[in-house]
Length: 243
Image (cartoon, rainbow, N blue to C red; front, side, top):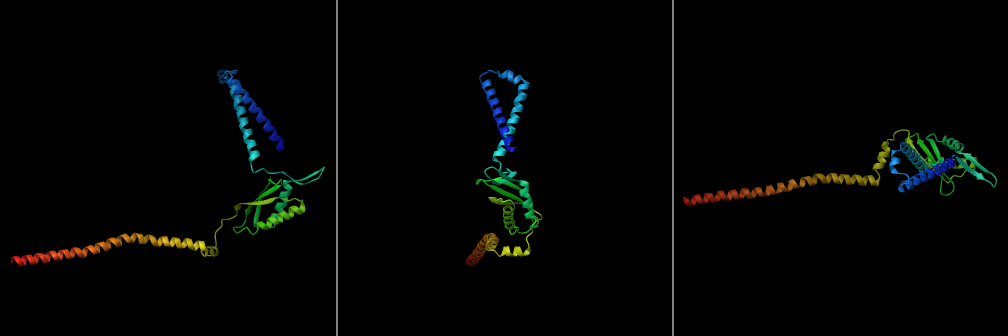
């Protein structure tokens, strides 16, 4: 059905393109005067409808040909010279959901089968984690169970099984043990040391300038006092000489 719809859309798109090209040639050669065409409301409505259909068909064909979310509805199991055996995606999904029941920590939301470059199928399984913990221990086991179950029940071999974790059932909060373990890692210690060094250097740079000014002021004060004492002694000697 999908192939038939795609063929019909392609033929309709070609026909509409031919109509637009013919009208463009007739307008360019002035066979159809532009003034009469602009005053004809029916012609404007027809062209607008054709343009809308053209855009809709173009978008549909682009999605069909370039979208990665093409879901295969029937899966080829094996074929002979005069017969072909297929299984619907629903049958395969039932097997996948049955395998997922062995792992209560995971919930399968949907499964999409896509053709790949190796003339085979790739399954993308969307998961929902029911626990806020490391689920990497469960996914390899689920993958192996799926491969074995599909092979034993249908003789189906998938080129790849990919997993997408779409949702966590609850918000993850690190425990005190995980925080302590993270603080003992070399990267954490390096970052903490750099932060401490930066914090320790900032007050020093702020106090260096006042210390220099204070030193200069203290150095200048004795010189001023000594100059004042010299002036006083010089005045006393002058008075003694006058007397």
